[in-house]
Amino acid sequence: MRASRRLRSPRRRPRPGSLERPINSRLYRGAWLLAILPLLLAAFTVEYRQPLAAPTMRPAFDAHAAAASAREFAENYPNRAPGSAAVDNARTWVTGQMKALGYAPEIDRFQARIPGLGSVELTNVSARVVGRSPAAIIVVAHRDNSGVGLGGSVNDNSSGTAAMLELARAYAKPSGNLPARQPAHTIVFVSSDGGSFGAIGAERLARIQSAEQHVAAVIVLDSIAGPGTPRVLIAGDEARSPSTILVSTVSHLLRDQPGGLVVRSSSFRQLLDLAFPFSLYEQAPFVGRGIPAITITTAGDRRPDPATDTSAALDYSHLETIGHATEQLLAALDQGTPEPRVQASSYIYLGSRFVRGWTIQFALVACLFPVLAVTIDLFARCRRRGVPLEPALRSLGRRFGFWLFLLGLFLAFGALRLWPTGVSRPVSLDSNVARDWPLGALFLFSLIAVFAWLVARPRLLPREEVSVEESLAGYTAALLALCGVALVILALNRYSLLFLLPALHVWIWLPHLRSAPVWARLGAFALGLAGPSLLVWSFAVRYDLGVYTLWYLALLAAVGYVKQPYLLAVTGFAASAMQLAALSANRYGPYPDAGARPRWNLFQRTVRGLVFRSRSVRSASSTSRHDAPS
Image (cartoon, rainbow, N blue to C red; front, side, top):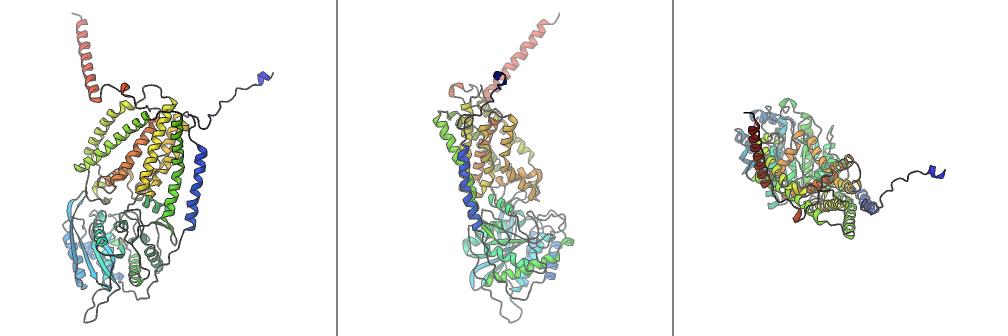
């Protein structure tokens, strides 16, 4: 009777530390305790920055005159794209306005190659008010547009140009024998060029100013008369942020205007901008060089739609609000103490509080530590058990060589100008090159890539059943390479770990899923791609790129905006992911020894196959003729 009650004993779970469960989960959980400290530090380092005192002054900014100038400029010169026929006339109009105010405009001409436009001449026009101090406060507004719409881009950026000229009127030499107003700082009003094509003129100005003198602050006026709520942009070309005093002061002054309201980018979007530094606005090159700079705008992350940017859409109330706030900001910065300082730090702006960037970086590095500890432990376990890693490392090296070849081919296509090329600045979203794929070059690139993969593929396929040790070695090699990529990212930009951490923390458990169904393994692998998918989603939604997102990211690499060390890190990530995908799909094979490698390369196998096929066809035809009835 007892024997009849016996049930079949369930399958015992593999022992922790065995080849079936090699990941030390206890070590992983214990290492997470280190992440608590950065979170506590972030909570206790939130600080409030007192804004500069708002000056008591009568507003001199004439919003009616600024609106009239904006409409006149847009209607007379609707197409102000670099290289167009009206560029010289638009520059002459701005120069004439400055001369009418009593300034002696300075003209800076330079050449730049713009994707889709070729090599064109750009011009920055500036008017200077010499102050008691050589330290400069710069007001910038680009006068060009994309040349796409028919309405003259009244908001982008005739409104900013007109407001900049109206602000310059307050510092102009008065008529008669009255003495000119001398500010404490040197005030520079700049009409930049190439602002709609990646802030090219602002980048040149930032390079010159950072080399010549100290810049106290830069105020960028861009699309300030649109229907959107005024906002302050602080993202830069590098993982830096402008002075907290500057950001706090401009936000406070905008809120204090009648009916004033100011919005900011969400904390998560600010974190994304630090992880992948990118902005279409002109504060970016200044912030990237550590110069305090902000942009005041009514537009979103991308510029206004040229099709709807007409005179009828100009919002007078926003033009007046931002004009008065900027006038007060200039006066506050000119007489304010302490003065905004050049800095290389970063932060997350919460509206009235600032979270220091080093605490966020500390938290990201702490999140990396559990993966590093477990991966090193996994490597040590393989060494103790005598698991050979050399074939797995050779297989990974073969995959890395394939992706490195693709990177070199991509850069070679750029050198041959098969891709759109130009200055290493963000490509205009309204330009043709951002949404027109070069189908011929892409087809040729894909053809060569497929051929390269066919050459590399035979030695990466499994020839026989892969043992548990060989599979574990493949996982270990890929995870070690991912940790190496993480260390490279750590040296380049700690915020960029945001895109890598999901893969590290999900893929570390793939060795435990070897006996799971293939859909579970592939699902876990796909989940690890959440980090890169986050970057793609961010560009697709924030900049309305949709299906063109991947091409636009490739275009940023082609023009050199994404630097080559980051491209090498992406190559290492792709090779590691490729090996883990092969393991998850049961398509992984350790790299064969010299004696087991195919004797024929791809070219030889192709020729040999064609010869054998032609012989078999001839033999079949002769046999059919011989068997045919007479």
